[in-house]
Image 1 (cartoon, rainbow, N blue to C red):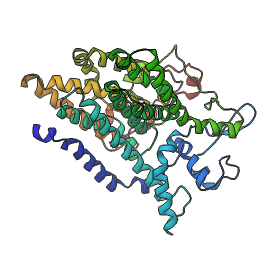
Image 2: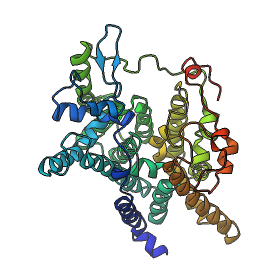
Image 3: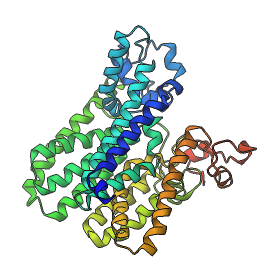
Image 4: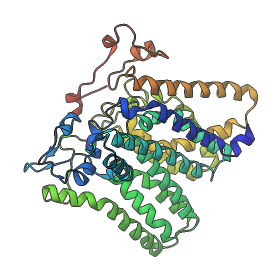
Length: 445
């Protein structure tokens, strides 16, 4: 087994299994895929390249079927609520889907038919697996190869990432890739600073911020790590590389600014209108432990990742502190959002972006576990195996709507434990959130 893991076969086995499951699932046939928020993220591509109608002045009926809508500013100018960063990441796959649909009379080249849905789902799995590959490279800097391989496999199957890889190509796995790539390039930059690394770090950071502006917090990790490592000596060096990285970050963000100016006459707007953060009332306990969307409830493996920060502290105080600061601020900011459960979704989906940092804790825990006696090791391996299987099953339950998208209760959660069918009186156990109260900062659960 040790030889198998050292050969990096464990990660590639996951890739093979995922591609096999993807091909069998055929969710592009069974699910609308392009719907609700997905339509908003994606809308830039068909509007620009198929309909030549970025202002949506003549929308087809298909847009309405996909629940597309636009927000308005105080002057009545209309614009797409979601930024276009995700559309940039979709674009190569969209191009292939559009080419196939255009050359194949079996499907309309309308931006919504099966080739486009297949392309978007393929992109989500691609970036999820690429993100795991890059994250494995990060972990191998600090841990043995078998720990790095096992950690990325477990962080995937033990979280809500499978659902967002196979069923809903939302922003989360794309940001997971971007965060992993920024960590990898930043650590290489600490080894040997160069413009060759500063440029992609800046561009990826800009794209990450464009997709989810609050993820600017991730950049604290390379800043803290770089400052503590002493790789850059003097203010001039910081300015030289910092300005170049900032320039390419700005270039990545600039298309959105041109779009906003085209639509509203303003270079920068707040596109979420009356949706806000309540920083003095973060729902951190709910976000971690509630049955509605608790991170540790729907991804119980992450409890071991959290415990692993004890071992991470002993291994590297710098790695521990830089990761924990980002995680703590990420939790505070994300769970201060008025809708801390982020509407319909599986588990704490907004925190998928921060799984690369949890992977460091998980790797530290597995490294510690490998040094323990069988009396300690055996039961913990059994528990880790169980919660990983349980997480996969919960992904399946959510896909089948057995886990409700926003109204799970403690009683319903345990009544549905390892059941692949709806329990009797399912609806009576739901606890529906009060969205209006939450928007005013008055929703307590």
